[in-house]
Image (cartoon, rainbow, N blue to C red; front, top):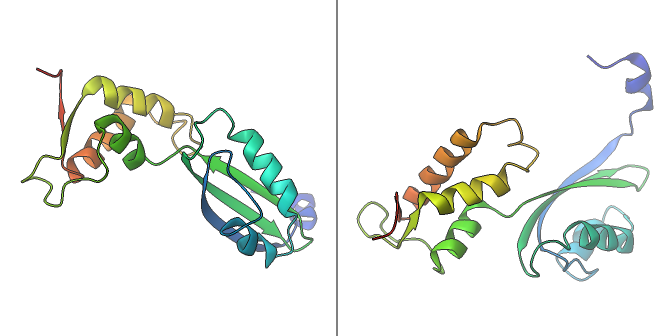
Length: 155
């Protein structure tokens, strides 16, 4: 429960903006510019901060970012690691999943690949308290729905 002081000092939120921006590639051009510009947010401050936070990732890695814009033209943002599907496609070396999952196998991955992806996803804010086994099961489910077969080891 929030205290009265917290409620009174809370800044009113103007909007919550969700974008997918390439790592280290935030520029004032679309899609970032128009999305932040309409709320009169400081574009250059966002771009510099975002690019600094995502410099450890390879360029052009799609990063999900949630920006909370406040009515006093300030903002906060959280960056999530790339999606599980993006990691699965990279690991499998495919452009897209199977058109008929369950019937046509697009590729095959080992449990080691799944474990490596789970280790990366564990650093996400919404996964940090989940057991690694649960994250792995979720990733295997996503792989199955994409037509990627998960095996113990490759033959």
